[in-house]
Length: 305
Image (cartoon, rainbow, N blue to C red; front, side, top):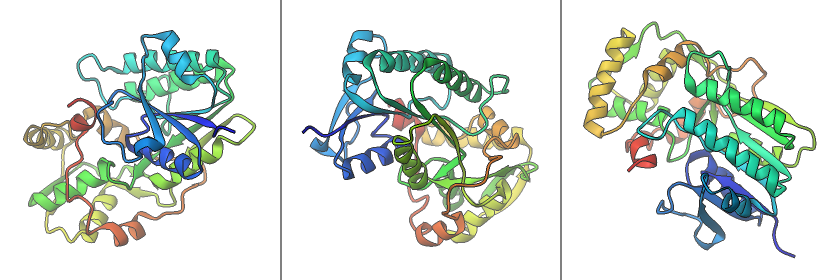
């Protein structure tokens, strides 16, 4: 009997790669859909890799035929050229309609904490639109809403904070720095997604870790654990973004967007539900601080270059 087919969008990227790893370990047949066919594939012949084909409905339906579960991690972090939040919403809707037509038995969708159609930021508005579309699609689903995900070689925010703390003598914390967030380890998000596939009822689950800390506290914790000598100081959001734009020009990347900083200040990476994750950032840094931030994690390299 052939192994059960599971489809993972972005299965060679960040959270998707952790989901793929678990499915392969379980002996599942895995199809990865990606925009980056030349990306390094650590799974080799254990997975099949194919393009999304968002604009070719028949091809997309064909790829999804016979799939027990579709794990959807596809999204964009910011507008860049023809890659926009509006296009991401459109592509996701096409993917979900194809999944329905193909007879996919379960959708596990990676959303974000605190999506809202009236949110100030298109990232969160788009995620809310897709959640509503899923609820109306009649596809059996589990929606996972992660807060700030950390851990793994492709994580951006925590890693790049450490990178900055290692390489520059000062670090500007956008004032007031008291906005809170709730980090969760990527392993726990991937475990939650894979376990949700076997749950019969529709679910919407906040994925948040056990620690609630301010951004200031998180930066200082990272600095302490990696033994950084950088001087930490409060700066206006505008000046902080100006400094990060200069760094972005140095590394040819977008380090942090105005919207991302705004979402941090609105505490959108904080859950209102009891925490599911158990990995404390402090403990993880004790084990991984020596490696954290040794290399810069580039969004442009990952998705555009």
